[in-house]
Length: 179
Image 1: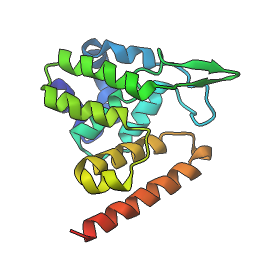
Image 2: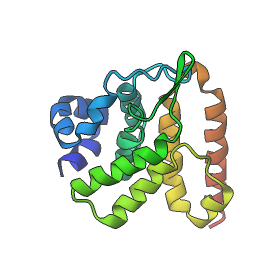
Image 3: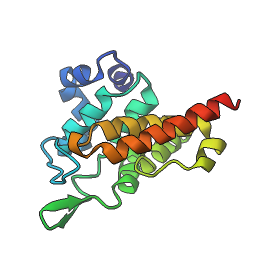
Image 4: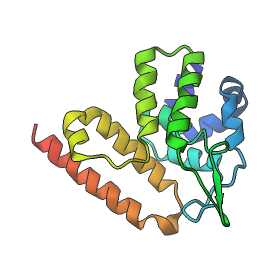
């Protein structure tokens, strides 16, 4: 209930800041994000602040906000040095695995954990036309997660992400009109 109340609040970023100590007691794995520098040109914030910015861009939907809270949780342990920058290959899969354990510990049902895990694992993958047609509601949630995540990246590096977001938004509109 605490997690729900925090994530569904009107001002999620501020509510998290006000309740950060309690949140970190419940999900201590989040502590590693604080101050963890992405060291990547597409990011201008540490992992925690990137997560907070993504959350602040989100609609008031618990599923979406829970995914955004946990989507990069593995980055501090799932990174590879590549010259002066860090790569995070495999972080969606590892973040899904960590989130499965966290959500189990918090008492969420297996079916819900599976849904959230799917959204975390797929948060970096392009949404296909087949997925939009076969799983429209889940794809729309994925789109919203990707939109929020994209807007939390470095402002100078957003052009390609915005084109992708606009393209998916148009496909969703067409899908809605065809029903």
